[in-house]
Image 1 (cartoon, rainbow, N blue to C red):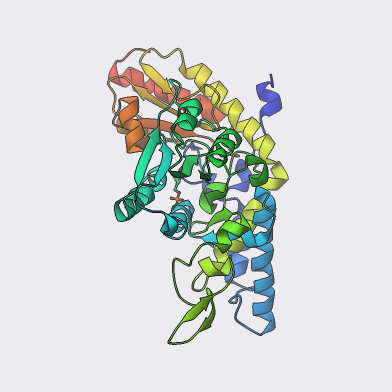
Image 2: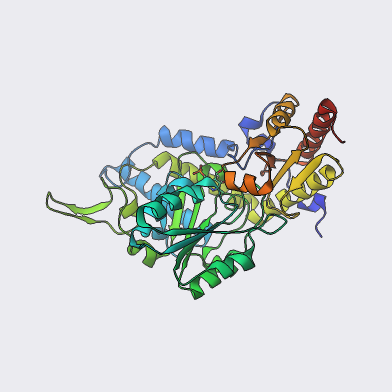
Length: 406
Ligand SMILES: Cc1ncc(COP(=O)(O)O)c(C=O)c1O
């Protein structure tokens, strides 16, 4: 087993202006702080380099187009995609999943089934409910194991001949468990279904290779990967994208337009109507450069070590209940008996520790855990054992204030 010292990255806090001041930021699963290199890339893109893409014939625009498409190739390399044209830029994971539902989903018929898991974020539940209600589909929900992972045996047993899509989170945003995507992909394909993976919490934490994962769609958001808000990625295999109709109409997504009819550009342009988020794409490329220099395996080892240290320190607190599997990717959820998670969050905030308290956009999961909300600490590149110590000290203070078991 790796020791904490071996797993822990050199401190990165100085790279992040948002971390200045005396606080411990433990809410990276909601959104990551931005390194100065990303902020600088955004400022340059809006400043000296600024121009539109895919339209201008002047040199500045041609240069920006080149950088925009280089960024697409960088994203493709980051996730192991075979071809940059398999990368569609969207606003975030939420938009990516809605794109799949509204475009790919058009081929589904009444009686078809979609299978998700009980730990999904609302953005991997609601788009399928909307589609279900429109087309008369069935939405099946696979259960969880006792330690809060997707019960893969049960999920695989629930794949039926009518199942057209399995849609699951790679890493749970509440409990941190990591799904065995390859195994689920193989089972889905054996039954003639496709697999869509919500990689929102995995992209910042695990080295990705969509070819090895074997999935058909992969989605994530730039802002959780140390990049800008408003930019995200939908990856799909080329032949699937080519078979999908547009979902939004406008400039850039067409080949020809007449008043009688229009024809569509090939992917990815077909799915990128309008002027894209140029600055977001350039900022995302800078964020990928930043994490790749550190290495995703090193980031995962670092965050796993922080999770292990936190769980070890929190386990002896009598009134504290830890949710989720022992080995999780950078995320832990917990509750303290008799204390509302919002009160935990407020007391920790007074101690300079920022966590998330609430349902984490996973209300059905809260119901299964038997709580209205949890407190969640999530780690990033910049956290260290000092942040874990502050969390633990803050939680001891909570138990003292509320007079619950220490
Ligand atoms: C697992 C998961 N899926 C989807 C989302 C939605 O991401 P966004 O709000 O960036 O679209 C989140 C964000 O919290 C998430 O954690």
